Image 1 (cartoon, one colour):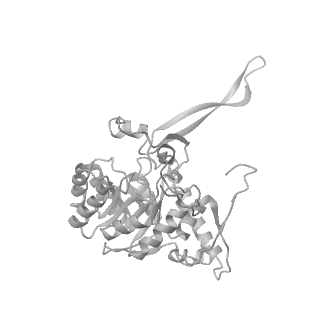
Image 2 (tube, rainbow, N blue to C red):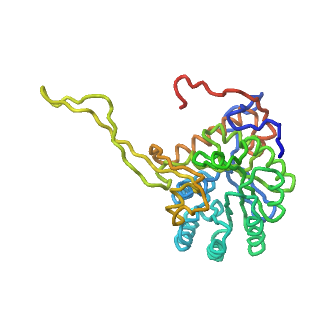
Image 3 (tube, rainbow, N blue to C red):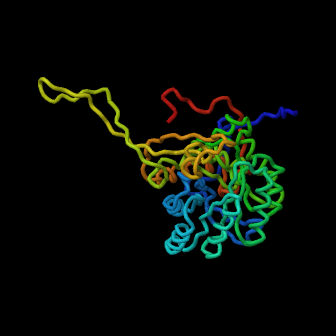
Length: 367
């Protein structure tokens, strides 16, 4: 048994130090970046925000909304092959390519066959290989198999939280390593297993290791506000994957429900009659992909040897996702002007952090 005494930090434990800047306006910064990869020979110009491959966020509708802002989407793996191919054909006509779309897969033989069918259409060549425990030999073996079959594919795979495993994955064929165990808003892995690592420290170590061998990382989970996305990029993340921040929108998956509440007010009908005022509110379900709800819905039930490592929540319906995306991009641009970073890629070089005990004044709530 060994204990690491180094302080491990989350996004809420740090704030960025402002610096003198030659940037006069948010319009002076460039949030688009040209991405060049270790194994994939293509160059992609975009902003490195990815909608998570969760059932409630990795939808076709979300992909279209993300692409309009030059952002990525990892399509969840529960669509049928025919549905994915039909979407990719239509999407290519609308956006000219599927460069900003990842198809998602697990590591089973069935998963491989499904991915193979989709890749053979040559409509897409971006793959998100997603497993809960990236330290399993099954992930490395699957990565090698996919890289051998599709040497020019863009491969995003994870999840891990340490630099050594990032290096192993990259040297075996991964372009972008997905980092984060347990930081997600509907993930209960840390509570159930005691395993995990604070996300800010994860990003710093994993980015350093990945960049040292020519790869990249995607920070997956833990962002609750646009400022967290900024901190992630400043800590060295090349990509940031979002789930909860994109859930509850019109483009999100999940069942819609309506609830009726008493307002506490009284409506007077006439001199003798009155009634309590009621209001209807809409909600959308959002759940972790290892939750009991997800296991029941997508995998035929929770197996006896497994435990639920996620939860189900109902989020107030938030309408179209576009305002949320613009708020995130606006936050990034503003952050760049504060620290003097003209390009997205420059954010880590321009960043100095304060370690803090509190970052928000919540006297009037957390909004």
